[in-house]
Image (cartoon, rainbow, N blue to C red; front, side, top):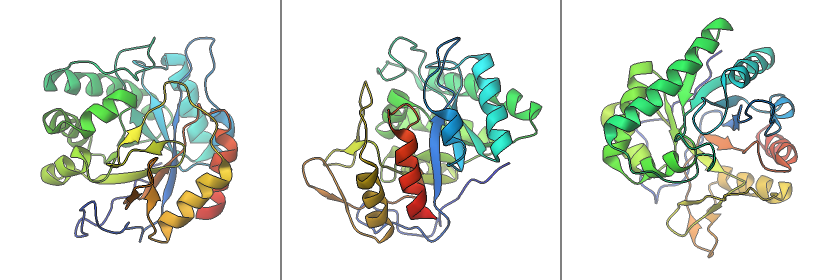
Length: 259
């Protein structure tokens, strides 16, 4: 199953523009982040709620058995699957930055995405998109040279790239002709420049606050940063992290808003 959403490339993509949500807004979640006997996240419950799963590919989390089970679960529930490649850092869960060359970024993403596509083929699914994890996501958002390497892998697989509007994610994808799907986050705070404030250990999110953020954003109203700065967040997909303690309640609240 493939249900990626491609934004209107003719739209104004500047950070000051109002959100463009003319097409269906999809709910996505990071999945398959267990390892061996260690389960992580609320995958089984969330698969009943979300549209798209970003599946870990073995570097920051996940292993062959976990990938197999996660893809099978997605196929069972009609959920589209994208690759969620991370930095090779089990101990830091891929949330610690590394100094990498563009060639290394390309190899890291190609290796992990290629592994996932084998499991997708087994279950009759196609790769839906690529969305990097954690520190890699942030590194690419701020470095156009690294992002060009990442966008090249999306071109090679012929899929969209999920990321943050107004960053190198979007600028490079537009320049290279890669379909870009911007995200809104409901369980992370935004800094005053629109950057995501990554937590090493996830804290519970108020489901009502998450639903309110989505409702406001859908209506074209600004999202508030931690310091009160008003941000115009362009998005066509909404991310709920599966490892948050109450992720199912948050996803349920967001789904109620989206319908």
